[in-house]
Image 1 (cartoon, rainbow, N blue to C red):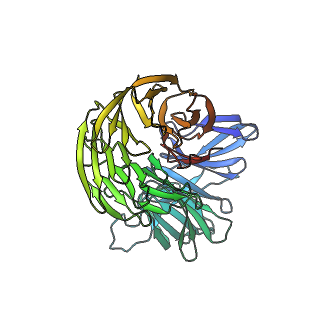
Image 2 (cartoon, helix red, strand yellow):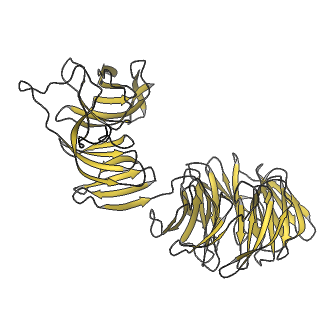
Image 3 (spheres, rainbow, N blue to C red):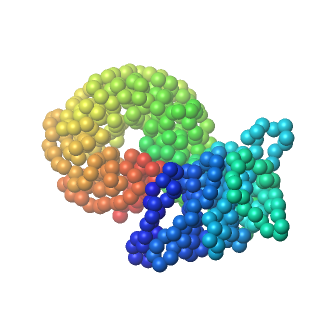
Length: 517
């Protein structure tokens, strides 16, 4: 692995060098001691680097039998010391010995103090040390892989002949030199720790995509920001408002507000481990948030509290879970991975299966209802869209595409049907005659991942794997707008009921909203 030094004024590389000793693993952490002097660590190595006349000069620390992966580093320039956190849960103190001809040396390997009757590894930090921050020369804030945040104080170092003597022969056993003052357990691994402008407060980031503020005096925790912690599969607006929206993904379902960015109003976690929320719809009357899951169930939650109201098990056929879903006041329509479609009747507190059909030869990728709720269209992975009448779920039309279909819509004018395929082709169909009346290629670059028609039927939004959104005028297929997300493939889009707002999600859990002028 190479180390490259850059000039950030003109983004020009100054010099580079290989790190490690040839037998060690990749680098994991780096911290500057001075402007031209820094330290780095990785798998089984610690090195200091000096930048002189656009050249790098390295000094390798003798770690001896210490087989560790050094994951994070914090530097105390005043005491000429660096502290490294390891994957095995101990803290390694290194004397940098700057200004001398000697290589850096390990001073101590420390863990928390524990009772003599405790297990041999009781003092190690659970899940390894992921992040460090020095509060002063003796107090250290440590973030662990299992979510524990610890404030520890070092025991005074033994002095020999009036000098602090660095170790020359490194022993592998760790000593209980750290006294734990405070600790707090979070629900996810701590990934980074940083200071805030406010005295005695720190910002903590976790692998659960949460940013938290910790008061070091009381160890009270305040949530600053929260994001989804996995790819997002679906997003939905309520019909009557654009100020709130809901997302579904690996971390469950969230309800968000534009007025409180970064803090979900309601958080619905997966009811079981290893299942994913695949679809979400907010009912037109606002009574329920209807969610489809990878275990094939549809669950109804209250939007105010996120409490479970109803659960429909085996709501779809196939083993791939709920792949598509549509909802009106009286019916729930669910598509599965084997091409099956089930029609459910909605009561006040009950759900009843009315009929089930399977005419698609591939996964049902999209279900859309007509504005008058008299018809619906289902799009299949095999390249066909089927138009059905309600409530009997009787097939009345076939709209055939040229490739696998992403979505299909019934236009508000009651006459047209629109289908969109993975080959960027848009097909306009006359539902009265069953004939295709127009066929055009969407003016987008890259692979198309999702397509949505605005509720007023005037604009088509096309999302791509290249993280770009194109707006296409329905009437003539002209490109009328473009939006760059720039962070992951577009996974889902939703229009607000007034067709003036568009919300977009990506596989990197990014949520972006646009106002359509």
